[in-house]
Image 1 (tube, rainbow, N blue to C red):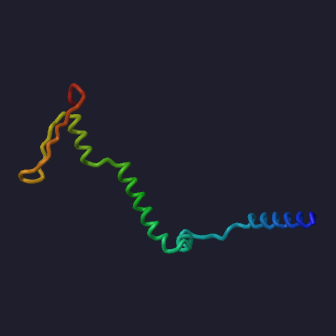
Image 2: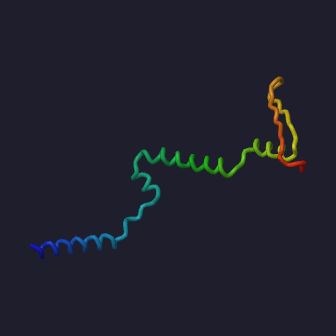
Image 3: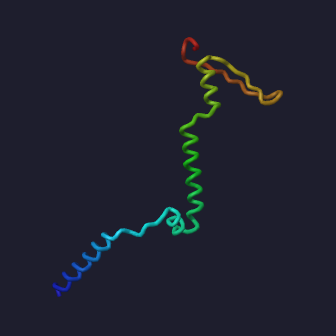
Length: 100
């Protein structure tokens, strides 16, 4: 009985070793997406949007903040009108004694 268990364990180990030695079948990226089912299409689109927003938000600075930084460095106050009687006032103070 113990001899039988040793043979079964050895046979199982040999099968596992031969299965690990054979390479898995080659699948292209498209085949991998198709094997995932229909849910992979929206997930792929959402991941592309996520990558775009990460790059756009964290690696580029908006032009408005660049303008405010420029006004702060130069110690310039600005009134920007977007309508005849409506606008925005930017009071740009700096902690520096002199402007550039």
